[in-house]
Image 1 (cartoon, rainbow, N blue to C red):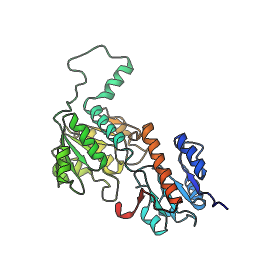
Image 2: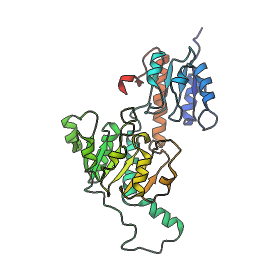
Image 3: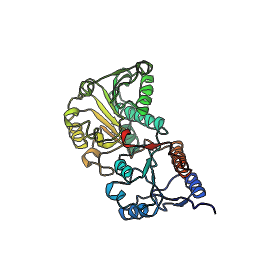
Image 4: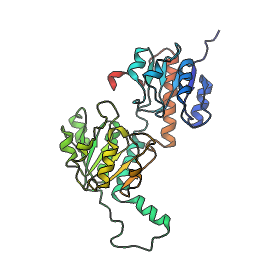
Length: 328
C-alpha cells in the first residue's frame, strides 16, 4: 500500500501556484482567509500536523512547541528570518526547522535603495503635494533634498543583502563602509569597494546614511540603541529593511522629532503593526508596510523553496535549507 501523504498546515495564504502544488504533493490544510492564525489555531495545527508552514506573523515560541504532537517533525518557514521561531526548543523536541534564504536578496536591496532615495530626495513629500492639488509650479527653494552621490553609506550587516546594497549604492556614487560580525575576505572588500570598521560606534559617527541589514538575534536587539543613535550626525539618515527590533524605535522617534537625526526610512518596526504614532506624524520619515520582499518573483521563489524543503524531508533526507541553532 502507498504510504500516507504528509499532513501539512499552512498558516497564511500563499501564491496560488504554490498552494496548488502543495495540494498535489501533500495532505495540506490551506488558510482560507489572509489573516494570521490565532494562538488557539496554531496550537491545534502543531498538535495534528506533520509539517507546519508558518510566516513571520506567527509566534512559534517554546510554549507553542511544547504543545506539539508526536507527528510534528518539520517547521518549514515561508521566509528567510526565523527570529519568530524558537529553533533551540524545536531542536530539543526533534523538530527540524527550515527557511527560504537567498531568494529575496535583490528585492530587499532594491527597497533599501528606494528608501535611501525617498528620504534624501523627499519623494513622499513631493507625492503628497501633488495629490493635494496645491502645487503651483517649480520653485528654486522648494523640497530641497540631498545628493546621493558622494555620501558615506554605513552598512550594518554585510551578508547577501548587505553586499547587494553595496553594489547598488556604489553605482549611485556612494562610498561604502560596513560593520559585520566577521570581516569579509580582502578580495570581496576590493570587489565591493568597501571599508571595514571593527568599531560600530566609530562607523556610525562618520556616516551620512546608515542601512540596517543584519538579522534580529539576541545579540542584535537594539544594536542601534539610544546611545548609538546619538552618535549619528544631525544631517544623517537611517534606513531599515531588516528587522525592526534592531533599532530602539522610541529613541529614534525622539531624535527625529528633536532634529538630532535628519530622516529615516523604515520598512520594518520594533512592535510589528503597533507603530509609534509620533513616528507616523513626521515628514522626515518614510514608512512602508514591510514591502521589502513583495515581488511576484520573490514570493514564488519562497514557495518553491518551502516545497523543496518539505519534499526532501518527505523523501527521508535533510531539508536543504535546514536551520540549526549554531547558525543563529
